[in-house]
Image 1 (cartoon, helix red, strand yellow):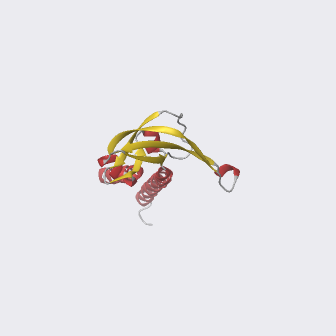
Image 2: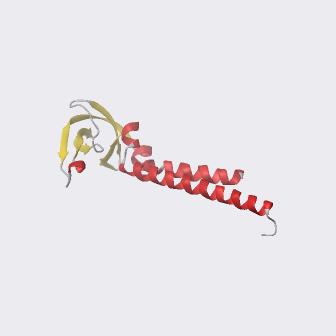
Image 3: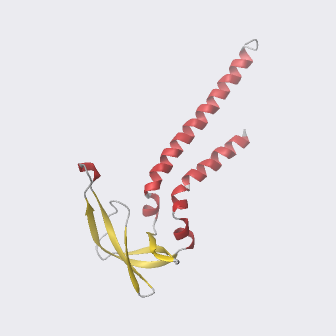
Length: 142
């Protein structure tokens, strides 16, 4: 039983770490730089619910200016200073370095979906096995 619980928690940690794994180079090996919010850009989708905006952040690495977009609908004020992490091998690859932006990456919704499926499947199988064992014990002749 302990082994099954260890497998459960190991896979749960793997699923939770999925959004971090997507940006692992920048998050683990990236260098910090200060960026400044320039403003926001509105994007219009096909329907009313698909409209969104993204904050534009400017930062400088080795006297070269770069711009990046935040995640959808992240609300920052013009002129606000943000900490970014960028890939030293490719400075145009960057991410806003705060819990909000890392947690709300598009891959996080995939992780949440996988967590729900994993927990439901694990406990359903566990429950089914326990019911099967009770049935065998109460009715040994089948």
